[in-house]
Structure formats: structure tokens, C-alpha cells
Length: 136
Image (tube, rainbow, N blue to C red; front, side):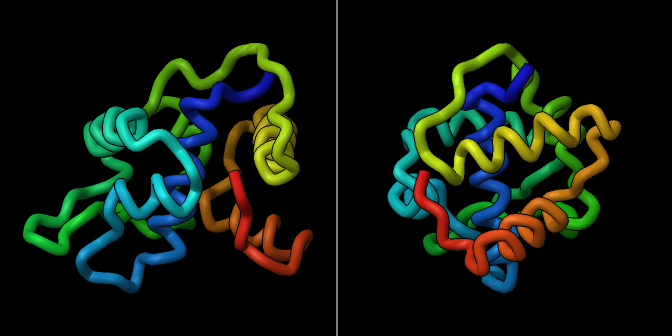
């Protein structure tokens, strides 16, 4: 059992917000879409679900975007899976090595009660790769 693209894209978007959390205006969906080559229309739907789940908040204004509502250590993968819904399903492994890493890491951790936080996921990937600049 692995994660759907829906959940994978949500996690990638949350990682982007975590990496840019010092920006008081947040990060725009368009910026995330362009940087991570994810469908903007799909991200818009995900951000609505993540906002309803209390994972993100919107920042109004011309330069506004989205930012994390909680500290990344307080957002678990279980929060994301429950908040987004429809995340877990059998799926072929994604061809991108970073996506495969994320899928495998999260799938492994599911058996450990889904307590891995967004910050822990970022730290594990950084420790393994020495960077956080992934392409999905």
C-alpha cells in the first residue's frame, strides 16, 4: 500500500511552505506549481482541502499566498492523510527518484503509526541526499 499522487503532491506543497515559512506573505500556488512542475488547478483543490483540515492558512493581499498553520514538527503525515482523504491506495512506484523516496519513506512509516512529521521528513531527506532541491 502506498500513497496516491493526491497525497504526494499535498506533502510536496507542504514541504515548500515549510521551506519558505519565513516569508510573511506565504507562497503562492502558482510558484509551487512552477517550481515543482505540479498541476496548478489540482494544487488549488488540494489547498482548499488542506485549509479546511487546518494545515494551511491563506494570506490576503496582492503578494499573498499560503503558509503553514502549524509548525512543521506539529504536522504529521497522518494529519495530511486524514485531512486530504483518499491518499492511501495501491499504486505503481513513481519514476522520479525523489517521489519514490517520499512514497517509500511514508509507506514504511505508516506501519510506525504515521507519526513522522513534515519536519522529520525534510530532515531525513536532507540527511540522505545532502540537499532539499528535489524535482518531481
